[in-house]
Every structure is written in structure tokens, then in C-alpha cells.
Image (cartoon, rainbow over all chains, first blue to last red; front, side):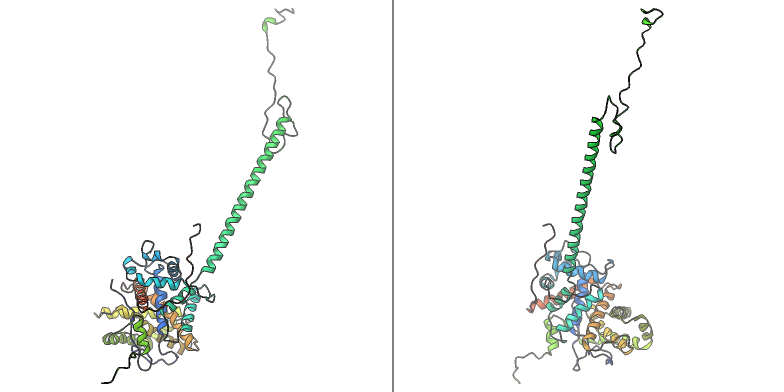
Length: 242
Length: 179
């Protein structure tokens, strides 16, 4: 793939772009500030780096957050193995040296005003910061990256989500402990009932009071005498008693 | 012969662009870019305006950006169908102009109210982001997420080479949970 460079025209003596086709009537701006253009390019580039584009199904916004997260999450992920669809290794190779400063800048935490989490809110925050920083001329790539990084900073939300998850895990553990305790108490009661039932038998017959309690297994029919044995040789017709 | 005073003769804007590694288009390319912008502008102010205004909805930067991105992508495709070669390196610059043009149209039609230059720049910045997005999601194989990231990486490289410091305080590296 050919090496891509952002190429544009300079300005005319009136401060407009040489490729402008009309003199703008309503707009107060003679052109889009270069810092704004670069921020747009950066946001789109980071979003692509995060996986957006090329039919991946990701939205621009999710790609942007993911892209910033990858940079601030670890430099190693930029260098190959875990880099997904958006960039091939050749695409990254050309920018390794520069990406160190991307990481540095995107890892910075500004005292950013907490903006909306919506897509428009995040982009609005980025360009709000850019236009505050730049009067149309003076800016650095670092400041552009800082604005993008700060606007997509999700550390507070991530922390809240982590705490919530931790709380839920704790509650799950406590519920499980309570259920185990209840099962043990039930088993203990059943055992005591069985002991009481067994100790209350007489010749194998259950004590009608204890054997009727919950959890007491049947103790069986109890002692049943066999029928009396019959001895024909001692029958009265030929026996000793006749 | 006058003695050079040691100061750069480049205007501040050009000096800054050079520092950032942004290259100026050649005269020929400027003419080509201007031609593309003019074609789109003619379309906007002739029979295209009703369609554009109908698609504008409430005049969000997203809608404007998507319209601008599609207009530029289609115009470049038309140019190439005619056998001309168009460098994608200037596509973003062309988009900037079209976004500005459409913003002016939206303001003229009272679809958006942008009272000062700052609000205009914010609006156009968002719209330009979506314009680039629309072009990336088009079928153009020469304008992809990868090429956009490459452009931006080149800017970062050039910035670093020029010794521009990246301001801010390093955040502590987050450690994965459980380690």
C-alpha cells in the first residue's frame, strides 16, 4: 500500500483555502482550522485503529473508544499480535516510532470536564477542547491527542462498573453461603428427628408421635410374629393328648 | 543582493504545516482539487440543493458530514471513470472545503444556528469526522481505515521528529485485575 500523507493546500492572501470555490456568505470562518482538520483525522484514525470500518460491524464511536483504549492500555498491543482487523502489520510498521508519543499523549489524564457519553457528546468535547486550545494556528499533535484521550476517558465509568461487579460478586457469595447454611440446618433437623423416632420405637413399632414428624423415614412395620408352627404328629387324633 | 535576515519567509501557517509534515499540494493538484470542489459546489447550488436539504434533517453535524463524504467519494469516482487519477492524500482537504460549503448553506437556510466562529469550528470538526467516516465506509479501496491511520501516524512521526513535546502527565499503567 502506498504511503499516505495528509496533503492539503496553503492559504491565499485572504486567509481562505486556494481550493475554495465560493466566498462564504454566512460563515464567520474563512476555512476549517488546521487543528480541527487534524483532530477529525485523528479521531477517524483512532476509531479505525480500534476496529471500526471495513464492515466490522463496529460503530465509529465504539471504534474510537477502543482505539484510545488500545493505545493507553499497552504499547505492546500496537506492535502486532493482538492488533485486529483495522491495521495490518505493515500499516503499523511505518509508525512505530511515532506511536510512542501517541501513547504518551493518550495516556495523559487531563482534568477534563466530564462530558456526555453519547457519540455527539464525545466528539463535541474533543472539538470544544481543540477550539479552546487553538485560535486557528498554534497547536501541537500532542494537544490534539490529549483532547481525544480526555474526551474518551472512561476510567471513572470503568471504576464504577468494576465496583458494581465486585459488589454483585460479594452478594452472590453471601447468598450461596446462606443457602448452604440453610441446607445444613435442614439436614441437622432431619437427623435429630430420625434419632428421636428411632429411640421411641418399641419392638420395632414407631412412636406414633415422633414417627409422624417431618423428615422421619418410615421405620417399617415393626415386629410381626410368624404363624404358630403346626406339628401333625402331635395332633389329638394320634397325639399324646388323645 | 539583500542580506537574509535569518527569519523564515514562510507564513506561519505554512511553517506550521511543514513542522507537522503536512505537504502542500502541487499547482497541478491544487487545480485538480479545486476542480472537484467546484463540481460539487455547482451540484449543490444547482439541482442538488433540494435533495441535500431534504436529507439534512435537523442539521446535525453527522448528517452534514455523511452528505459531504458521499459527495466527495462519488465525485472522485466520477473523475476516475473519466480516466483521471486522483490522489487520496488530498481527499480530506477536499472534504474540508465541502463541509465548509455545506455548513454555509445550512446556515443560510437557517437549519443550524452557529453564532460565533468557535461554534462553527466545532460543528465543522464533527461534520468532517463523519465525512471521513462516510468515505472509509464507502467502497473505495484506496480510502480505508488503514490509510487514515497511516496519514495520522505520519503526522505524529513528523511532529516527533520536529521535537514537539507531547504535553501532559503520564498516567500510571493499569494492571489487569487479578495480577
